[in-house]
Image (cartoon, rainbow, N blue to C red; front, side, top):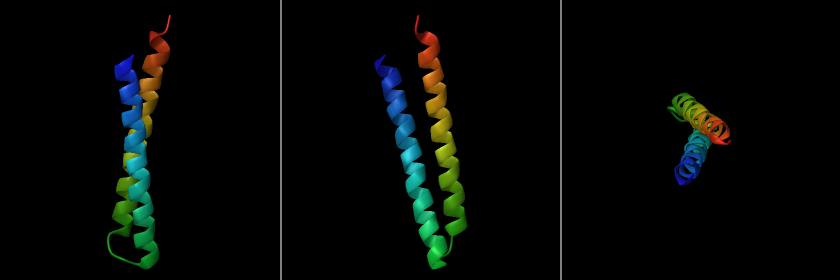
Length: 66
């Protein structure tokens, strides 16, 4: 059970990291600095990876319960 909790926390950390990159990308876009679009795209992809990772972990936890 400890590894599933660690995996849930890891998914949340990955998602949070994606949110941070997305916010920085939005700031770059607002200020018209270079690479704003790329940062937004990368941040959104990292968010999706974090969400999918967390959903898969939650499904595994749900299926393992008797």
